[in-house]
Structure formats: C-alpha cells, structure tokens
Length: 470
Ligand code: ARG
Image (cartoon, protein in one colour):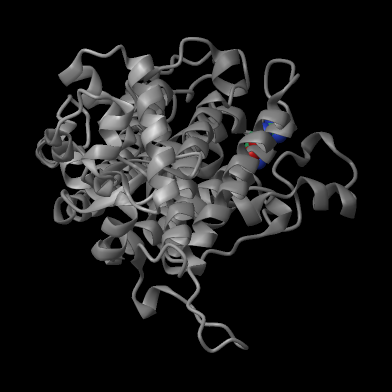
C-alpha cells in the first residue's frame, strides 16, 4: 500500500507512514525526530511548493482535475489558517510537510492522498528550504542597501571632516570621516554581491527529484521550477535532495557581513569613549548604567559586534552537520534549519540596528580634526615633499623625516610648528614651502590618487555609489 493510494483515514494519532509499522514511535523517538517547532517557519514555501506540484500533476494528467481543485481549495484554507495563526500544529506529524498534509486530509478527505504522488519529503524540504533561503538573501540585500544609504549620507555630510587614519590603532595619516565611512560602503557592497551570487547559484529547483532517484510519473520539472521562480530544475536527483551548499554559501556570506558589521560596531564603541570622543549616539540608541549615573553605553553596537558569534557559529554548525554524509538524504539534514534561521534572524537585527546607529551618529568634528593633526600624522607628507622637491630617494627622505619627528618631539611641538632652522639642520635644501604640506588639511587634499582620501575624490565615489544604488 503506497502513500498516494491510501490517504490517512485517521489523521489524528497515526503517523502518515504507519502502514508498515505495528507500534507507535517511542516517546524519545518522537522527541528527537520532531521538527515542527522549527520548520513551521517554512509554511509559506511549503504551500507554494504544494500548489506548484499539484497544478503540474493535473496538467500532466497524473491526477484528475477534480482532485486537483479539491487539493488547491484545501491548501487555500490551510494558508488562511496559517496566516491567521489558527493552524493546529501537532508534534505527532513531525514536520511542516506532514502537518500540512494531515490537515489537508482532515479538510478534504480522500483527494488529499494524491498530492504526494511523484513527490517525497526529501525533494519537498529541499525545495521549501531553498525558497526560504532565497527570500532571506533577497531581504538581506535590501537591508544592506539601506545601511549603505545611511553610510553614504553620513559620508557626504562629512566628506571633508578630518580624522586620524590609523594603522595598528596608532595615528598614521590624516583621512576624512567621509573616506572612512566609504570604506564600509565598499565592504557592504561586496557583501550584497555575495548574497546575490549565492542566490543565482541556488536558484535551481529540487522539486521532482522525489526521494532520491527521480520519478516514474511523467512529471514536468520545468513547469514546477518556473512556477516557483527557479531558473531551471536541478540536473541530478541525488544532488537535489542531498546538498545544502546553498545554505552554507549564504551562511558564509552572512558570516563575512557580520564580520564587517562587527568592525564598524567596534569603531563606534571606540569613538564613543571619552578618550576618543569622536562621535556620540543619541539617547534613544544608548543605555545607561544602573549604578554609575554618568554612563552612556553603546550596547547596540556591542551587541551587533557580538552577533558575529552566532552567525559564524551557525556556519560552523551546518558545515559540521554536512561533513561526511553519504548520498543522498540523511535525517542529519533536518538540523540544517536552526542555524540558518538563527543566523538570518541575528543578521536582520544587526543590520537594522547598525543602519539606525549610522544614520543617527553625531560626529565631533573638532575632536576628530584635533586628533588628525596629533601624533606627527603628516610625517609621510614631509618625506614625500623631500622626494618631490629635492629629488631625494624615499628611503633617505624617510630617515630625515624620522629625525625631524624626533626633534619635534624633543621640543614638544608638532611637525608644522618646527622652525625652518631646525629642519634645515637636518637637510639644508628644505625651504618654507614645506609648511604647505604639513597641515592635516593639506595632507588630505593632496591625496588625489584614485581611491584616496582627498574630499573631491570622496565626493566622486559617493556619487558613483548613489548612482549604483539608485
Ligand atoms: N523534516 C525533514 C527535514 O527537515 C523532512 C524530510 C524528511 N525526509 C525523510 N526521508 N525522513 O529534513
């Protein structure tokens, strides 16, 4: 007796595959097997997959049109119940697929048993999950674009706002806040690209692979693929039901995005310290301390930074689940959903919170400009001047500049306040035109090479991105 000829007559209490079994599953069997609490999130995809499959079965003459009508009507009712929160989720039916099928049997009786013709839960879950991950990638790209817009607006407002550029978190060369923020626009642009790439690779339909070997029925896989927005059916039925690389690839993209978010979050945390004082966030995006009245804590930034743990953890979790599984489906793969749901939930929160923080960030331009000139940050400009104006080899210019920094440090002044006589003791050819390159403004304005920090260049990159995202 096969599934399709014997619809579940008593859907409550019996599992859908009970025909071969004489005992009900042990409590522990059910406890470890049940996944409805997690995979109920696939309900929209499950209904969509069943509709496409049912229409195809009818169009191919595999089931009758009256049965198909009854099934589609039942699915409509079930969709309404799910949407309204009235659907009776039941652990005894294990997962979303069997919960829907059992409910269909209750609603329409006999014809419900024909829906599972030429289909298995293996291709069904692979299809549902691909659809879900595809949607999640699309949503994430939209969220990344919103974050990029917030960064672009701040970058535009601060295209010429001086700040120290760091290496090793030591003052290195002056940059502008606009330039700094645009670095993140580039990073998040690549992140969005990774989600888009993952989407295009995953957009093939597993439906019709059936259990693992394909189907003896004259199914039309192109039709179901098209109905579900897939580009084509997957070309190997074993692969279709047994790989989850699309989920892994999306988690890898999520993990890299989370890494970028955590770096920006860390910078906000650092900028908000009184020691840096480069920026603040408004009250509604910070928290206070229950004991220290003066505190203003960047909790949201810290939590964005921390979400990376969950997201990257999810990638490790699923990579480990998939490792060493023989073809084709194994129940191990039911453990694919929790990490993916968890990672995308965390990424959703992190992107939304970061977008709010970037939009609301209040830079302290005076503090940043003062810091931009500190730490002999224009030393490279002096060395470059020696090379350009005196034809000195860069290595020697580096040495002379080092000596100038040492002298300025001893006198307790900045490089731009070092008297010309002092500079000339180190290199007789130096003239007072050197002071034209020693201010942070001049340093920044001189870096006109493509991709450099000169404000006009930064504004041009902002314009490029606004056009790209329009
Ligand atoms: N709930 C299962 C999962 O998520 C559906 C597929 C079950 N297939 C099977 N052969 N038992 O993987």
